[in-house]
Image (cartoon, rainbow, N blue to C red; front, side, top):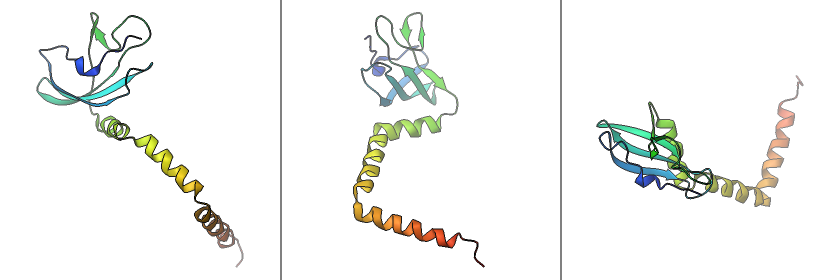
Length: 124
């Protein structure tokens, strides 16, 4: 696999400065990254694929040089990338698993939800 470290993606040099990687899925197939940087002296967010099997520099690229896809309004992308960088999905999945394994809590929740059935009846 031809992985391009997103820290090294600083082209075009006359337009991009202060690249800060927010999330990088690492040197795996389908790897992608999100970064904050200055683009023409304005705060911007960019995304890119870091590379695939074989030759190449990932996407986007310009004349064989890796570049960033600059997003116009990107707060939702930035927030999700920060969550992923902080273990977001793994932590959420672990919390759900922990809750499901708490048999006493599950029994109480089931009893409570079964009690709601009577509340929804059409008795009047």
